[in-house]
Length: 605
Picture 1: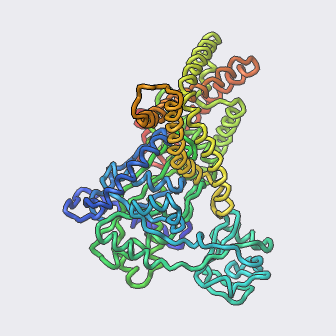
Picture 2: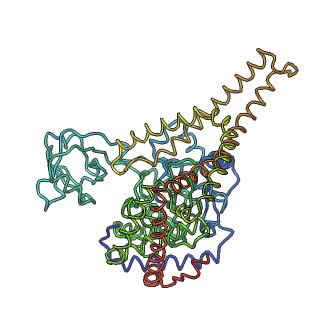
Picture 3: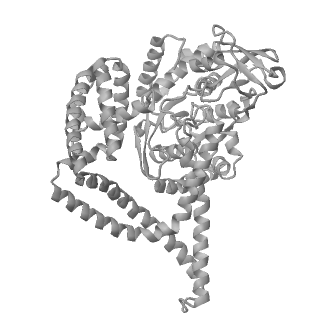
């Protein structure tokens, strides 16, 4: 994150805040009032909504693991800051669920005002005491004409062709560019064809884009957030919890977006009003493995709570708000980096994950939480040594290994099949094929029953992703909305579909006297509403096992092909050499980046 403030003071403040946190956690005050832990009807509704949605999430995700949940304070005001915001409406519900289970706390999340107007999402948001936030991007509209930068040395001066800046734009509003190039705040409007930005666009390529020629743009008005901030201050003063995704909207980028100033304003503003509030900020890492896919995995990691340094509150109260906000944002950003896995681009992330698989001990399953920690440390180490010739060579070798795996259509852990004799490969192939056939027969009835929902969720989520991508300036493929729409569609369609099945079964029973002794006939409806979902759930569990078996068949078939057998054997040797090289490199450079690095302890873990 770009900073005009020296890094050393920020690091010092972060260390000081964490040091205070440890002491505070060991001297918790159980008597402190926390409004979110009180027994009220609203909180009962909150718990019922979270429990109901948890059932759905347990079906969609194969595994959801918390990490570091012991760090969550049980009393007092807390601001939970979560990133990356990779799963739109799913992220806040998952976080609320884990915090309710692990710490008994209830969060009031900040939700986009536009989302509050949606029927289902708005109802759920109000049920869990969400606080609406008007966002400039939700109010954005296409501007008249084209804009450009005339002088590259003056990136603050925006020129227009056929524009109506005086009529359509306002001081404090935003100018927004397409192609994920970001936005910039308007400082003043000179004329209909010229305006001045408060700060230049953060992305250098945005300036290059505007300098290369006139382009279309969007404009958004300045939004008054005073009422929203006051609600947040009141909640924190009552000892409650606030949740926020400081990046703003959801996205599917491999790195964090620049943090919005709002979270810092909330903490500093609340402490300015009530210096005894003792707010703590808890960083939450939302780490997903394929977040848009059905039966994927997630790890939610909680970092050490931060206390806002008193000197920042003092400078904020004295009017030096910008520097105070900036330094607190730097602290929060550093804390979030410690609980998330980010990388400069997707290709780098793929290489990092491959290196982690090559480093891990063979035939040992690493816990999901440790996988996240290893990925994070590898990213940090790679960033530190990325210009080292040895690392450049190793990256190219790992990337080439990944390319060969994709070409053969096999996964890294399946390369070991090359060591098996042909009779054993044939035996495994026959056994697994028979097992898959039996499982497929067991899953078929449930798959047929649920097929309309699968088809509808696939089609609608793709359509919504395309719409979100078109409307966004930061999304890459809009995968962040896919899981949300899959769940929303399933929540709406599945109950309707199973009621239809139940009524159809009831009508058939009555029409053809299939079970003449059943009186009253509504018992058939009740039984059908139990049996049909149970069949579908059984198919889900059986199908999950079957899919794992199905994925293991291709490498076995590939190994039986004489043309591929030699290639896979060479690939296995390549893997062994790469594994040795990666392990030696990590063990050699690891202590330089992480003084506490212990390869033996890590391998044993």
